[in-house]
Image (cartoon, rainbow, N blue to C red; front, side, top):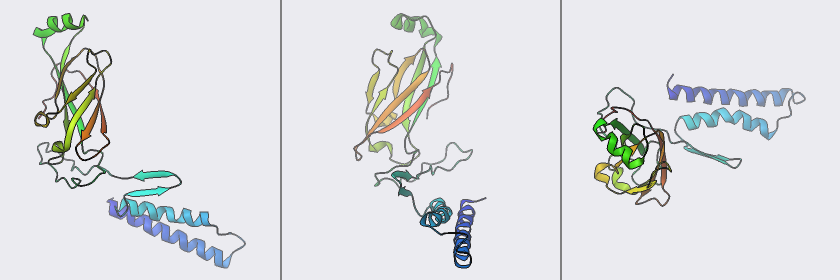
Length: 209
């Protein structure tokens, strides 16, 4: 069922519930003492319908702020589809998928002795490549720099990258899987965007475009 149909049912359900409560209050006041809380309950489906329909993107009440900003990327089989138009260019609030971390890894047998000598660890060592990417045109040009937080066992666990042409690529070696964190500092937004990714180690990982 499409989202518009779902939201329509929420409107209908809310309206019927309000009418039912009103009739009961008029004809049988002794059965139901209509209070404000019942009206609020009746309005819940209506509010949900409005949110699903996209008319309201932020609901604030009871000390809780809910902001709805889902991904707008079309899902399909074509991985080479064009970048989306950056409609968020002049906005301070971005969708969840505006930036994301991507990575790959691979094992070079001819480099194992060199890597093991460097780390003094007798285990397989993988090359890893980590980048920041986006579905949106010109989104990477808004980034000032990226601060990567690697595992604490690295000699340099915090590293900065500022080259947008290679998508802020981080080249390192890894001898175990861990979660990498990236703080993305933008030119026009003061607070950084925090991204995370689990670094899976493959003998021959996917190619990064």
